Amino acid sequence: MRRSYRYVGPAELKAAVRPGSGGCRIGSAADFAGWVAERCAAELVEPFTFVVGADGVLLLAPRRSEHVACAGGRSVLSAGEISFAREAGRWVVGDVSNHSTGYCPDVSSWPSVAQALDRAGLGRPSGFTHEVVFRRCPGCQEHNIVRESDFVCVFCGSDLPEKWNVDPLTESCEPCS
Image 1 (spheres, one colour):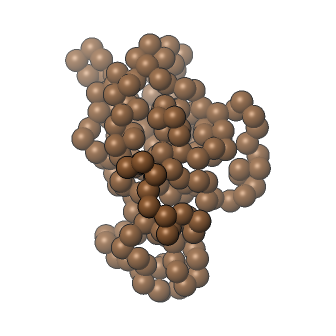
Image 2: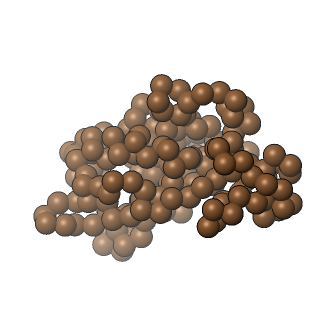
């Protein structure tokens, strides 16, 4: 089952997204080869912003890009940061996280990322190398990053739920299949 994540970040960032301004679509090994060939060495040292679109395709943008811009304002199957390295003559994922405060994807979004990376012909880890746990506080409604399994709101001190609940419109729904 795959859950789709709506953008839950600041409205002004979504409002700034222009049609056709999304990240570079990486639907195959050839797409990645063309994209990476255009990157300079300095760019490849830093992670990139990524999203997995609702169609399961990886989209990449420079690190300081907003995830919502990379996604063209649309819902995603996952989002985060990713870095690449050369290993044994091929490109592999060095690090990958679900760190996106605009979409706040659950760690359970990994299978969508794995499928998109496999489609792009990239060697990858077996899961996120850095997992970020997001929760919305039922008391003050603020989004939180849970650190060290401390499910307490940093804004008001309320207990946070164990289950992902960031998007109030989908929290009562089962994940999409």
